[in-house]
Image (cartoon, rainbow, N blue to C red):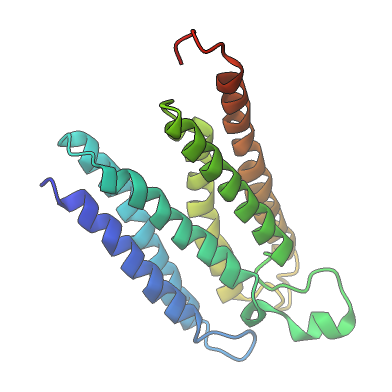
Length: 212
C-alpha cells in the first residue's frame, strides 16, 4: 500500500495529459459538445485521485518526500492547465469578437485570470521554498485547500456550461452564472494567498533566538 498514493499522483499527471489532448479536439462552435463531456469526465476522475492519494497516504502513514513534491505539482498541472485551455483560442466566440461585446470567451475564463492565478501559485511556491529552506514548516493551510476545492468544482462546471452552449436562445443568463463562478475562483485564489504571505512575513520577523 505504501506505493499506491504515489501511483495515484502519477495517474493524475497521465490523466491530465489525456484531458488536455481531449480538449484539443474541441473548437467552439464547430466541434461536437460530446468532446467536452468526455473531457469533464476525465477531469473529475483526475481530481478524485487527488482526494484518494492524500487520504491513503495519511491512512497508512506512508507520506513521502515524493508525494509532498509531486502531489501539489500534479494539482497545479491539472488545474492551471485547465484554465489555460479554457482561456485559449478554442473557447473564443467569434461572433462575440466580431460584434465587439464584452463576453468574448464562451468558457467565461479570460487570459488575465490565468495570469492572476499563476502569479499566486508562483508566489506561494516561492514563499514555501524559502520558508522550508529555513527549517520552517509551511504546508498547505485551510485556505489553500478551499481554493483547490473550488477550482475542482468550478472547472467541470464551466466546461459543462460550454457543452450546453450558453449562447443558445433562452440561455443568455448562463453567461452571468459563468462569470460568477470564474470571478469567484479568481478572487478566492487571490485571497487564499494572503495568509501565506502574512505567515511568511511573521516568521521572517521573529528574532533569531525565538523558535519558529
